[in-house]
Image 1: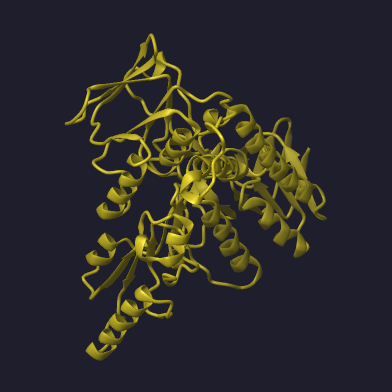
Image 2: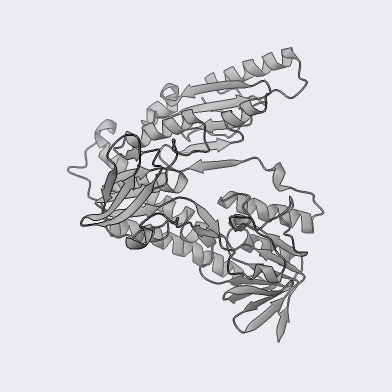
Length: 446
């Protein structure tokens, strides 16, 4: 027997539950299917637990800096990793329960627990049950990539999920991957007391950023005692009496790093390989991401893909924006498009790295006139007061095509003023802030 609905949502991540809310409010009969943890990556193994641990690490770091602020802890700061882990887990559980409670109490929404798989273009099997709808929305998220490194099957390793369960501080944590996930864990575990080495295959950390920004991030983490090994062209793993030997074919430094624990942080892959997509005619790219158009519709009629599984953004806010796009187009007569989205994201190191809009490299590639203004945080009063003078703010401004030279000059003056004071300016939307203390993404506060 097949149960029929107006819409089926697969996955209770950041896009699925709010979409269920909009659809049921419009009078639709909705089924939401979740096979594991409600809330998705963000609530369970991403944003929520990691930022809770970042907060613990920051509190520990500030306590160690007490003398700078005029106080003493009366002794060495002692880290209780089990309590740090328990705090993060409790915050995640609260959020997870909140999502589940919201869905259970939603009129018109039927929650089904189990693994969904297409058996026809409009029908999914969940265990022994079949459910069908003319509109199906996939919000199935992603998981950590486990790369085929030589020796990977001979040693124990952690991903972003496993490391959250650690109840003891590693003696030496080797982080494979020098981007967002890797650097956040590297800094927090260094502050918990571990020796940390970051191994990055490329020549720079956070490779999608401009080289100057990458080097600023490197300086910050190295300043806290984290070893950084870039240019590791051939990374190998092998058992060692002290844990794991990580081979790094770098141009400088020792050829091997011996660590007690290894964290793999080399990217994410969509959870699309076990959905039976071929039964619905849904195409994926070489990474497994579901192919979608500008409105997030897949190659199958009546099926949309939202969040990490569509390869159009791997952040909580982009997943939520996917929901907004789909809901507006279906229910409000809108014509919203993914290509209209202005990219924005943050790396939650301390100080954090935040960016909205283009990198300087991308802006220069347009060939258009470009204005650049920057200011070190050491020259920002609020940063000095808080004892957080590392990093800088940078702002880019591009006059519109066809603007007169007078207008370009005005934009230049406005940009200089807004960097040197709190005067707002309209032209400059993209901004990089390495301190994360600016009050707005449209201008630098100081």
